[in-house]
Length: 174
Image (cartoon, rainbow, N blue to C red; front, side, top):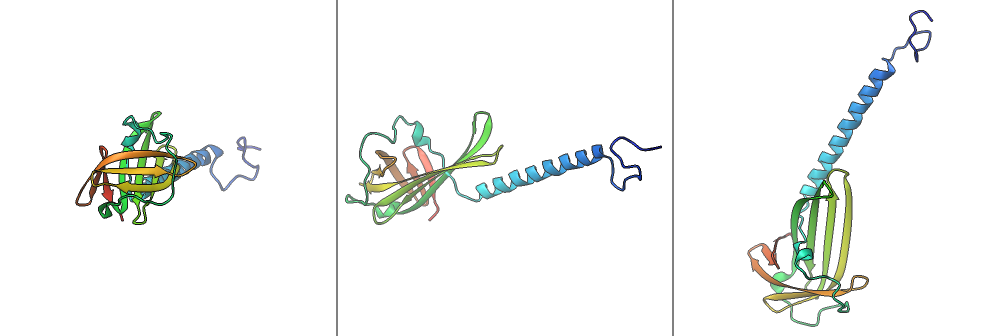
């Protein structure tokens, strides 16, 4: 008991005090979290991402038009492929990386994938909508399938590997 501190055994301890261990554990936890966030940022940065600015252009996806399957209209072969755009923004005070990927397939099917990654919490949310598409050389129309039925039309211009869809630039990824 002589020389014994609270929390130590009477025979002494080969370990440092609980206070020092708690400090080391806090540092290890902080380093692990920082490493995880850095890894997540690098992983997200490696994915060519997009910003869905078209969500804010006054046109909603749910316009009351029924969703459909394959094409049936004109298809512009220049649009066929995957197109991606990335934006980093602040949502509710947290920095957020938002990736939008459009895939226009030669068979007239299409998909929209939106991945939102909260950089602070490392939480990711993915939304995928499937449908069909047609294009007349200046306007592409996407008709979404259930459960997210609706139709959306965008003007488009392709310049090399850049697609301007509405007012948003996308880079060809596939």
